[in-house]
Image (cartoon, rainbow, N blue to C red):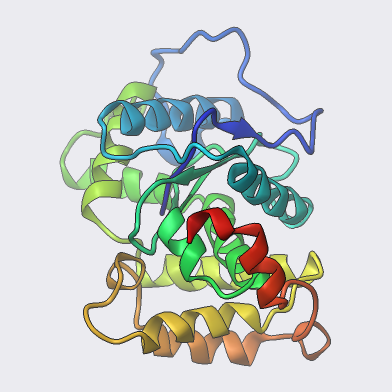
Length: 261
């Protein structure tokens, strides 16, 4: 899961989707994995506010970079399983660490460090697609449910939205996704970038680049399954007709992200 930027810009590619209404928050208990899209967006918004208010993350104040990430996200969204349910918010976090994550309700984050490390747009798109895949798979919501049960916090009716958000923030800080969730997000992201016209080969290439850099693994890898195994799984899943495609021009990508250098 991951974060990022200034005035958070919301993707409006699907203006008819369900949206947060009225600004009020229900106190009714609900099972975390049964949140309505509107409830999930409210919880995601609260998590975003809590994370930014804590000072742990600083939004990157460069509208060109932010708009670039939003544009990639909007290109992928038509191929998301939940494009008609959620309004997505893509943000860039000012952080040299190579990392990316998603919370819930459409909130996706990437770091400036990851953007600088990526070699082309297709590699960056593969990370964004992976994080959208976590939201599509409701992976954090399932983690929250399991954690609440483990800690004895779950009532017969569930949890209120504030408690769901609080547990979600704690999980983001403390625990990686499961191996199964990461492989699922990989596959969802791979399908997404291929359908959007990006080269599917970029996803295993980026994963291999992370694995090959040596030294201590970046946070992106230290909280995820063995990258070599993921590379093999991705390579075996690539559609031969989608192996090559858009986004492989490294010079064009360098020029678009020069502010990060």
